[in-house]
Every structure is written in C-alpha cells, then in structure tokens.
Image (cartoon, rainbow, N blue to C red):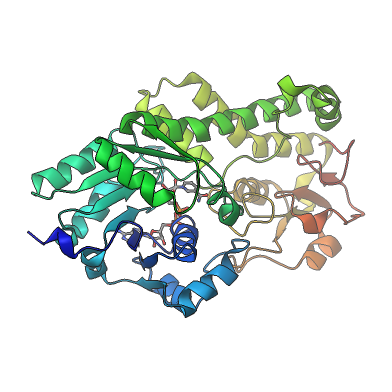
Length: 404
Ligand SMILES: NC(=O)c1ccc[n+]([C@@H]2O[C@H](COP(=O)([O-])OP(=O)(O)OC[C@H]3O[C@@H](n4cnc5c(N)ncnc54)[C@H](O)[C@@H]3O)[C@@H](O)[C@H]2O)c1
C-alpha cells in the first residue's frame, strides 16, 4: 500500500476526473484560482489539448481569463494520463451521469470510472463525488474502495451551479458536504472553504436526495409555468401578462417562472433519476416531464390549427437549451426541429452561440427565407429583432400579446 504521508494537503493537489467537462473545468479553474495545484483528468484528448492551450471547449462567462492565468502560472494542467491520480491528496469525480434512451439512470457510471483507475488510488486520499448521482452510489463507492483494501475518505459534495453562472456561483453558493465520518466531512469542508464561506453538512444519502430534489423542484416549477401558459393560451390569453400581474409585489408567488422550454443536461434527467429511484411512482416528476417535453408538440399543434405548415418554411431562433448558452444537450429546440421537419416544407435553424451543429444557418437567412418563426432559446440577440413574419413566442421575447 502506498505511503499516504507522501500526499500533498487536500487543498494543494487536486485531480478532477471528468475535469474538462461543463462542471469539472469551472471547478478546476476555481480551485486553481484559489492557489491549489489542479490536474484535470479526462478521456477526451481534444478537450485536454484545448485546455492546455488555455482555450475553453465550451462557453462559460468569466472562465477564460481565469483559465489563462491558471495555465500560465502552471497551477492547472489537463491530461489523459490516469497516473496523475496517485500524486493527488484529493480526487474529485465529476463525469456525466445521463439517463439512457429508456429514461433509466446508470448507477454504475461512477463505479466504472473509478474502477478503471483503481490501481492509482492510494491510502489517505479524499475522494469527492461531485456528479449528480443515483441514491446509494456513495455507499457503493465506499464499498468499492474497502473491498480493494484502500483506506480513503469518500465524500459526496454535489455541484449546484447553473451553466453560464459557474464562475460566480462556485464562489457564492453554499456547499453541501457529506461523508460517512466526521473526518471525511471536515476534510471536504476544508477543501471547499477555499471557494465558499458557507458549508452545509448532511449524511451521504440525505445529500444525494438533496441534489436530486434541488433539480427536480426547479423542473416541476417550470412545468407548472408551462402548464399555466397552455391553459391561458388555449383561452386566448397572454400568460406573461397574467404572470407579471400576479407576481407584482406578491412575494408568495414571486418564484413562478416564465414559460419556456425546460430541458438541458440536468433537470430532465435528474427528475427521471429520482423517478427511477421512486420505483417509477413519481407522479409529480413524471407529470412535469410530460408537460415540459410536451411543449414543442403543443406549439406545433397550435400552429397547425392556423397554418398549412406543409407549404411553409419555418425558422427556429435559438437551438441551445437556454438563453446565452452554446450547450445543445437535451435541448427541446431539437425536438421541435424533428417534429417540424415531419410537418413543414422546410425548417431552418439558427443560433448565435452554438458552434457544434454544421446544419445551422445565419440569422439573416432565416429572417429572409422563413414564412413563420418559432423561438427556441430566448437569446439576447433576438430581443431587438422586429421580424416581419408571424412568431410563435412561448418565451415572450417579442413582448406581450404574441401567443401561438
Ligand atoms: N452541466 C451542469 O450545469 C451541471 C450542474 C450541476 C451538476 N451537474 C452534474 O455534473 C456531472 C457532469 O456533468 P457535465 O455537464 O460536466 O458533463 P460533461 O459531459 O460536460 O463532462 C463530463 C466530462 O467527463 C469526461 N469523462 C467521461 N468519462 C470519463 C472517465 N471515465 N474518465 C475521465 N473523464 C471522463 C468527459 O470527456 C467530459 O469531459 C453530471 O452528473 C451532471 O448531472 C451538471
């Protein structure tokens, strides 16, 4: 067994497994910014190469300058070489945990990633699970290390940032910290005290549910707004006018969100992880999924009542899953596109931020050639537009009164 006294301190030498992803990279940059030595371990050679050139593989406001400083100062390096694990005091695991095409979670994802590198782990290390995990995974990982004779502390410390706000929220949100032992919790709390003053301790199973509840709560709130939107719209009324009025100086309703596509890499899949954990008996979660995932179908249905789509070119403005993002993972704009491609003569898609889709066309082409527009993501760039064609505008980008 390796000598744990050779390890650095918890806040000194950190390896982030999955370190070039949407969560791992901002986290690694944040730790490096606070003086830690960070190695980002990732299976994507392309992402590793970009990070080592101080380039971001995706857009995250505020991250680029901090990345450049950290790479230049030698405090942050990316690698595909798993031997880096053996030199770190702290290993953070933040690989993706998606659900599959049948909405099943993959409770083995973290176990497989750690097992593949098991020979590099050493006694005395702090292992921080940061992915959003299926309840019970923390215990599985504890057992994995114990069965392999490794004396490590396992902590589950969920990430709760929103993409696009990472470099603010990593330094301001309270950090939920959990571990089986007080020593594990204290080490994890000490680690995250480099980033935030506010640490909340839970037991691992409580923390696993806390993270799933956080995302599912948000998903259900969006579903309520979207259902209200459909009710108002079917009655010929403008939901946003109603929402603005009912939330005005009325704190008990101030958290009613606007309507819009609610999807992306986290909310949908975490609601489905929780549903699977609840033996598929999660009525509220499944209902939220049906409402949110049904919104593109609702819009197309409403359009079909008014227009002969088969004779029309439809333009979709915004393909990312949310405003100002370049992330198209689980974006409902693509579901909308698929439905419209079946119904309409032609579909043209545009997005000022998305770079990974070669089928996108410039905004000018969409505005010149589309007979009808649908807003997919409410990017700021669209707010000043005054399109001449009709717009299906669930996001209310073009102001009150524009309903499907
Ligand atoms: N995206 C968000 O805003 C957000 C917010 C909070 C929590 N989360 C959670 O964080 C986790 C990661 O999400 P993400 O959006 O960063 O995913 P991602 O796909 O952007 O990043 C995962 C990274 O892990 C790498 N990877 C995959 N398998 C690996 C392995 N075996 N070894 C090393 N690297 C590996 C991938 O190449 C990728 O770079 C998920 O559990 C997610 O639910 C995400």
